[in-house]
Length: 88
Image 1 (spheres, rainbow, N blue to C red):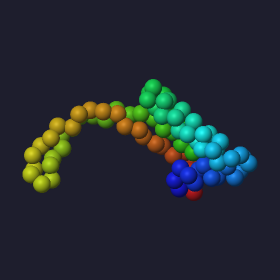
Image 2: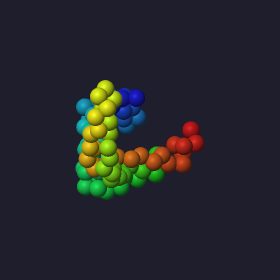
Image 3: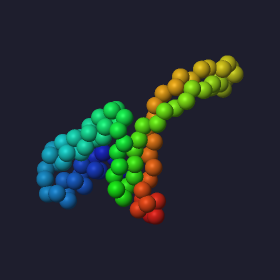
Image 4: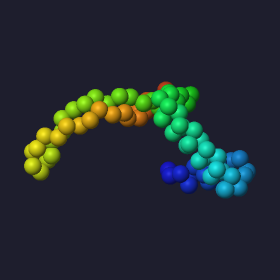
């Protein structure tokens, strides 16, 4: 499923135009991005939880040359599925 599929589903089920449905989907995605950027946890009951986790520093290796490369610490988004989603 891609974004346009979500827009079409919202338009069909809520009986609004595709333009308004696209605006609604974009608004939701922007709200999710801003919440994650602020370090907040997003919990969607029955679906799952998105949260930002710290990624520790490490050492990688170039597969061609074998030269070691330092990997900087960072942040990543983690998703933990909810109970209903796990039981599909």
